Length: 284
Image (cartoon, rainbow, N blue to C red; front, top):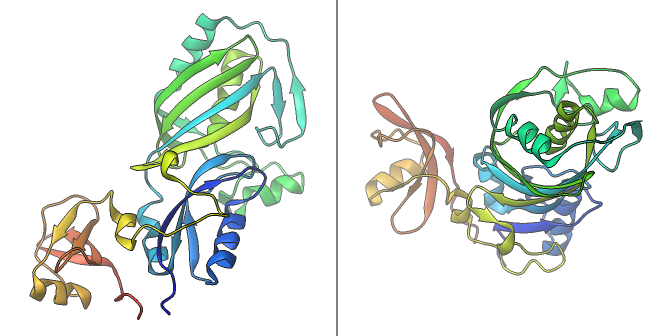
């Protein structure tokens, strides 16, 4: 019997890591070849893309997709992890009007610089920041450029804030909330976060780790990429990783043929196209 393969859209429950989800899928499907794209913190819930079998090789093409979230924050309380799982390090009075909140939120829309949180997997000097943070050492990563397409206030009662965010990959929403609290002068921390979308993949279509059902086909992992259809001769060359004629496309693109079968992912390089990844034939 062939090993399972494909893409699962999983609704991650709270209180477990993204790797815990991978472990649950491994046990459920009795296979070790499982991975995920786009880590969620233990407190966060929502959409996690999980690849099985040959689809694990395609996960790197999913990591850079834009993401959307819904969440809530509490003004006037700061924590060391910037979310509700952390230790309270500062409290302050809150006297923020809705107009002041809207004006502050608007300043975080667009391309901005963001410093990754101390409790994160970002590496400085070869070590994850959270390792140094747990030793009580103050190590800060350099700021990096992110893009916030939308930061909308959904509700506000003077302290509790509900919001929606659409942003680029690499954005830390808890840092966004903490920076908003700093801009308001009272501090804030993230109390709830749900990832609702990754690129074209929606939480509404997700399954639970306990009830996976059938995976989407391997080809679903490249549904967001431009597609190029090849004839049998060209597909044979692509299956062996040989250069092709350029497709005139920016970035990576999925190569199919003959028919709906994914053969490889290519990228134009001047006068020719070269493979970024060649997919092995399906098992069995």
